[in-house]
Length: 341
Image 1: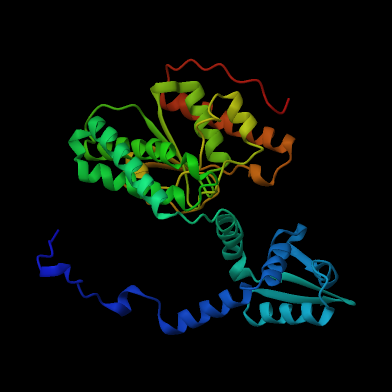
Image 2: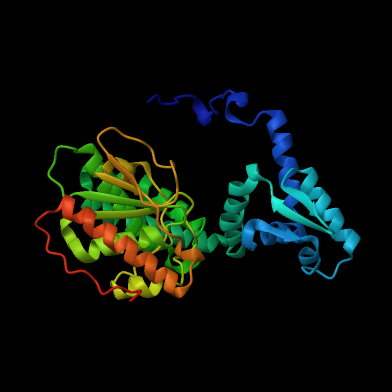
C-alpha cells in the first residue's frame, strides 16, 4: 500500500472513464429511471410485478387512481417505451407484464429502494456527534477483545458495519447495539481468516436475498441444536429493513427473535465459513477453494401463508439436522415438534 505524502492532501488523480458508466449506458439507465420516477407509474409497476401470474389488465390498472383513462394510457406508454413493461392484446383486453430483462431489477427496486425511502431519517449535527461518540466507544470495547487486529482495523469494521446497517434499518435507535453485535461477528471472522490453522468449531453461513426469513430460520435452528459446538452466520445479498413478521414467532420459539436482524453479506463471512449455503440468491456468494457450497431450494416465507411458513421451517429443520449430523457426528439432536403438524 502506498501513502500519499503530497502537501494539503492533494487528491490523487483517477482514470475517470474507468470509474464511471459509459455515456450510452448512462443514458439508457436514466431513461428507465425516469420511467419509474412518477408515483403512479411506480405503483403501476408494483401492481404488475406482484399480481398473480405476473400480469394485469388495463382495467385493473385503471382502478389504481381516479385519473382519466387517457392519463393512465400515457403512463403505460412511457413504461412500454422505456422497455419496462410489455403489452399483449387478447380479445378485447390488453394485459401488461414486466419485461423479462427487468423482472429481477424491478423486484430489487421494490424490495430495497421503496422500504429504504419509507425510513429516511435526516440526522441533525448533534445526532451525528452523538453517533460518532457511541461508535468510538464501541471501537474501544471491541479493541480490548481483539487487540491483535489493531485499533485502526477495529474502528474501520465498526464504522463500515454501522453504515451498512443504517442504510436499511427500520428502527434507528437500535443501530449502535446492532452495530456492536454485527462488528463483533465480523471481527471474529476476520481473526479466523488471518489464523486459518488455529483450532475452531465448524462454521456455517446461510445466505438468502433479504436475510429476513429462510436464512434466519436456518441459523436459529443450528444454534438451537448445536449451541457453541458450531459457529453460525446468516446474511443477505440485499438485506431487508427487518425480519419478516411471519417468521418471528418461529424465531421466538427457538429463543433467537430478540437478537435477529438482517445483515449484509461480507467477504470475510464467506472466507471464515466451512460450509456456505445459499437459499434463493443464486451465485451471489464469492467462491473460495476448500469451501463446501450448497444451494437449498426452499420456499420463501415472505410469500407464504401461516401454514406455508410452518412447512418451510420444517423443511429447513430437516436439512439442518442432516447437515449437523455430518459436521458434528456426536451431537445429540432431539427433533422439534413439526410446526406444520
